Image (cartoon, rainbow, N blue to C red; front, top):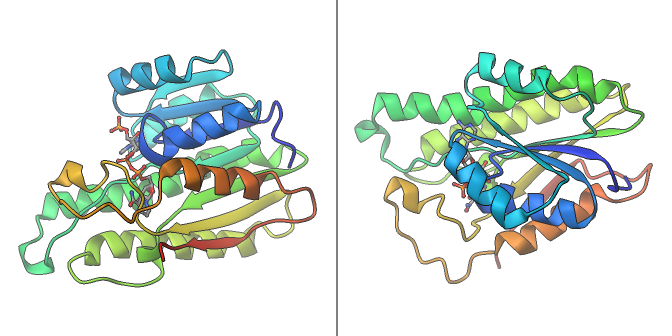
Length: 228
Ligand SMILES: NC(=O)c1ccc[n+]([C@@H]2O[C@H](COP(=O)([O-])OP(=O)(O)OC[C@H]3O[C@@H](n4cnc5c(N)ncnc54)[C@H](OP(=O)(O)O)[C@@H]3O)[C@@H](O)[C@H]2O)c1
């Protein structure tokens, strides 16, 4: 798809991969919309991106009312990137139930809610993309990541089912499964890891930009990106 003047919604675009994607797609002359829960973080991102092709919305993707309010304000949409997500690392026995609910609410329900609300907009375009950001932990488990991994496996099931359900429509459904990226994603939950060998979000955003910009009829349906 030629990305020039295409409207792209990126959930969780105020930092990390979502921010890098916004930067990459603005550089390809797309109209970019980012959302997140914090107005302050969105304002900071907006200042850094400094583009009249950028719009921001405060929206918690795990709240369907907020998702509906945001989507009501969007008239055209060519690409939806479900990127917002939160991390959790804990042995299952000591996992906090409210933390478990948060991870499932944001990583699973958030993706489902935003997708459900945006499908009518995506259907109106001649060609559109739905990109769900899962993780390599969404195709293989890891000790102490059972809840996070379960949430990302759910994204895989949702994505692959929609690939069949939307097969006869104009919407291309793309599942993206990256390994560790150098963001504050893990640190926010108090998890400190050696990040020296991790991918940068700029590199990963470039890969996604490349994938989305392939000409019709070529399309990516599943991409696993690993650290060596
Ligand atoms: N970092 C990694 O190593 C890694 C590896 C594989 C996959 N992933 C996946 O890649 C995606 C991006 O990760 P990242 O590392 O870039 O994360 P990040 O740096 O922590 O950024 C997360 C973004 O999502 C937003 N967000 C969080 N909860 C939200 C909610 N309920 N509603 C709306 N926005 C919300 C945050 O803004 P607010 O806090 O203001 O809401 C922020 O803009 C996630 O889906 C993650 O699971 C990450």
